[in-house]
Length: 128
Image (cartoon, rainbow, N blue to C red; front, side):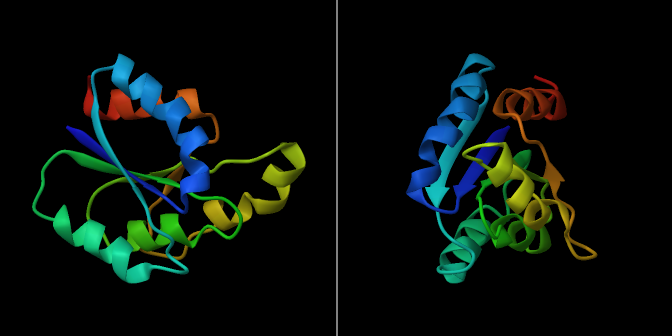
């Protein structure tokens, strides 16, 4: 069991830490990367390719604004993809949430807004 966290940028690290602290409490292994689907799609594909033969992994994407990262990961991997986008406030959430929720067909991404609920969902998915 391992969570592969892909952040859109290193500025998402404080949001990721809210999740990884809980994953540590649950004894769930994780690794973290920063790679933008908009600016570094080859790097994202490299992360996906390097984990393609793994078993029992889950991708967690953390990207705000125009969140192409979650859909890109969901469409290019056979593993579950969870999105937990960061927001500075409720207005930011209302403006930007649609880029995370509206995915094209064959792009399954589950969106969870609360970092604690995201970690708990991962725990339950893994049956930890």
